[in-house]
Amino acid sequence: MTILKIVNSIFILFAVYMGFKQGWAMYTGQPEMLTLFNRWHLGKTGMAVNGIITIISALLILYPRTFIWGNFLMAACILLIICFHLLEKDLKGAAIELPFFLLNLIIIYLQHPLSKTNPV
Image (cartoon, rainbow, N blue to C red):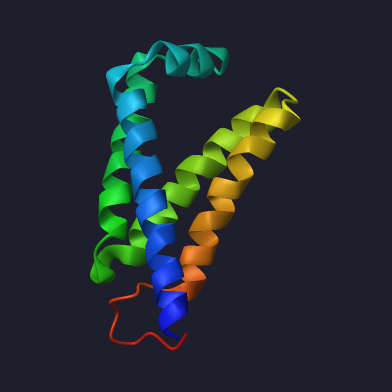
């Protein structure tokens, strides 16, 4: 029971870190992100909006009351990127995003470690 909470806490911290890191890269228009999003005909504004949503979702994951919404938003952003990769038949790109998508689903299943109604 306690070990699962510790493992899930590590998963949550990793997901929040990666969400904030990637969201900031999108928001600030890092060159590698511009290259990626330009392939999908999403300009700097679309990339910045996706970055803001990713950062907000990462922060929402930290709090038990907004935990599900944060994970849902982050998973939706990752799924959007996976779909864009699949539209251009880039299986390698989609496969790279898949573990991050699954991580959000695992975190949802294990629930927030500080939640009062944590059955796991």
